[in-house]
Image (cartoon, rainbow, N blue to C red; front, side, top):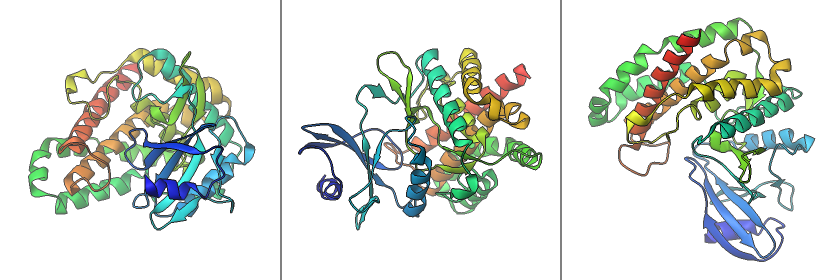
Length: 339
């Protein structure tokens, strides 16, 4: 907490700091709730092991926020007009929205619809931005071929005991490699590059506590070039089942078809006019793509010894990978039934 308090001195906050406490359940960054006698803020330390080029992160955010859209929570800069960096990390400050929440799982259809509208509005807003002016903050973040190469490396150099335990998951990873081939085909057909959020899991939007209505898009660290299938697909991945990524009971993972339909309808209601046919026709494939790539990433991290994602118990990345492969199977079956 001392590090956070010291870094906070670079920002012109309102009131005297009364409390700084850890906040949220993110896998990557360290986030704190800052309470003063006048208002509340969120203060976050960027994980520079993951985000090795903070200038790219902040440059992208500045470019996005030039429009002063109420789509986003207010971001603060230091007195020097930048984020705060010191030997302990890079720190950013935003408002804390106390009448809103970031849902970890979709408990009702209204949440799904409102979140999807929000990310649809983001897609519409970003349509006016030049993707060439934005940089990847994590190289090849959603490049499936790159992620499969990382998995192959883990298969060669991973922890032997974990390789043995994960044999079934490795087999599933191989059986869905066709997803990579199809994505390459869509890109060749002209799938357009856009400015994307690139991490549209459900808890990266804020909904009103009062009525579930959409309020803001948050967590802009991965903002940059991408495909709309990434954004729709990750939202689909995190809403169609009522379970968390680390659910211990695999039998609880299920597909709620009404949620898939509501998700797509709400998203298109906000941005259909600016999407290309190849995007609209393959939104559901985005769900397959993003679920598969997350399964590969969790599996790779498990085999490597949990070096990327934060874990709270020994086999958490194994459980996460297992659950993503189960979800992938269910989505594939559901999407095939609808086609």
